[in-house]
Image (cartoon, rainbow, N blue to C red; front, side, top):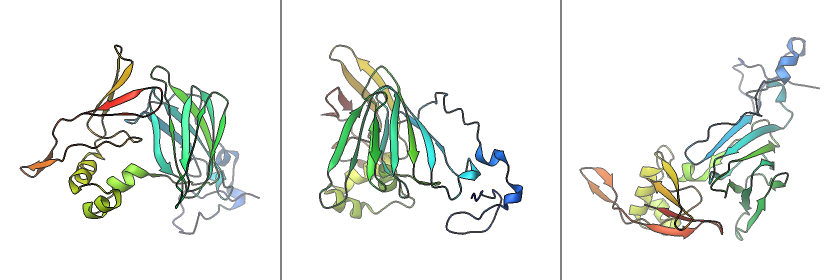
Length: 250
């Protein structure tokens, strides 16, 4: 049995109403998605091409979606959750460092380095990520998700870029940092701009950044407010994000 989504329906239900079967055609189960075509990556170095019930109405009630994920060299799909789906991912090209974190109180990190053909599962609702550790080669993965509409919550965007913003007093207490650090993160959460360049002399990766990469934490100098605008002092912070490279941010 199938329950095709009527695209123009104004009926609101938990899920979607179903199209009268006599109007269903093969095109309701098809999309020329060109998932074999590379995609341009975004500012954090990834691009997720999701095919869910909004692209293929025939997926309604079937509980499945698929996505192609492109990763630039050193790109990532930053920590996020799918509130309605478990995800199973396989690497088509390149190498990925992937992982998920369990719920409270243990918050255990399970992570692996995946090569071409490897498969990894991210349980429903748990924070997870994928990172391409190769500074020279892109990576590609295909993911299947156990929902027609899995949803996504990107942690950095939700916490530091909500509209209206979460009180800096609340976040400062939660992260045990000063309010100035929270102000800095919130001011930059919507203006992510990274420029990657190799530093051949020491084989490190230089991130010319006006904000945080999604997988790392830094301790910037306390920002000051001048003429009502947030201003930042230039500061360096360095850490190892994996065994393969060092990242510097200013």
